[in-house]
Image 1: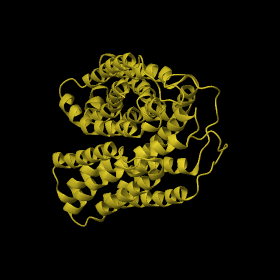
Image 2: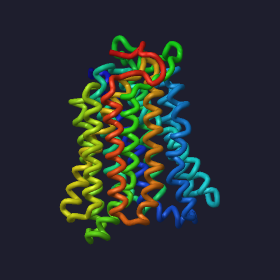
Image 3: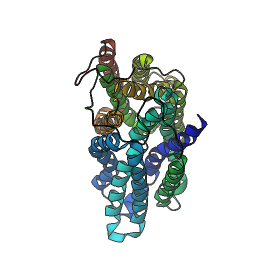
Image 4: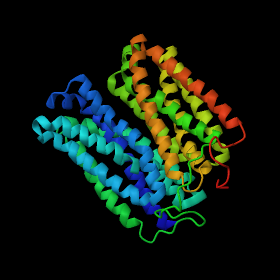
Length: 401
């Protein structure tokens, strides 16, 4: 077991970097806008381009990983992420071409981030087999932890050398990538499954079950509502209750920290048979937290609901990953996880757009409507999980026990 611990720990560190880098950018956006003379729409492109590039390339990258093996795809993706970070950093010295450098760099980072997310989870599953649940939960917890640390690091660097964020991000990824590649020597994959880095024989079709669709829907619902809450919560607490901005930021950080802690601890209890219950429970808790927040009953109940909502959020993605990889046929793991990543990213984009529109109706409307949407998704998920597993497309043969 020790021989597999080092590459997984390194993967956890790498999983935190894209989220850490992305959340730290919030602190330097005002400086970017001033230094690179960017308009509002130009800034929107900078924010969205990495997510869009991930959505577009994810299915192709997943198919390639299933064909040639995850390791052969993860390593180039990590290098691509590091190069994208360095290119983004070059925007500070590119003069009139600074905006193009920044957009191209963020695009490369979006594609490269696939190596730290869905493909990393598929790699751990191939490596450890049925023992992978807890380690996959570590990866999700690490990503959530990056959201806690990112704004702090961004705030510290913003007033000094803003482009240093990109250089540190790329340099850290490059070092971790090299260490991870070296740690793979002598690794023995789980018995009975395809090698962690070996190509699969043939290309079996990706077959979906209702339970996989339920897991996909849970991840989409979480990201759809979470992005609006994280974006506008600090301003809401200030305008509605007079909470200082630093204190509001601490509430957001506490939510993210509880989400990461719950995700890490959930690994002990993750089983395919329990995953559907955990996903629905997480959605119900998160929906309740959003609705209580929007009702404006009182400050303490609102803050407590936000923090408790972090527990619900942490119960959704780890069991979703376990369920997807348990139900997916052998040789389709990377495609199954890449599709999950795409749907979660689509949730981020749609959630961001809808949250921006709902704020015109008031913050209470935003949070109550988001909670109602998550509750509706929980209801649909219950229906999907309650039905006896059956293929939506493809055949039952090839499913793992």
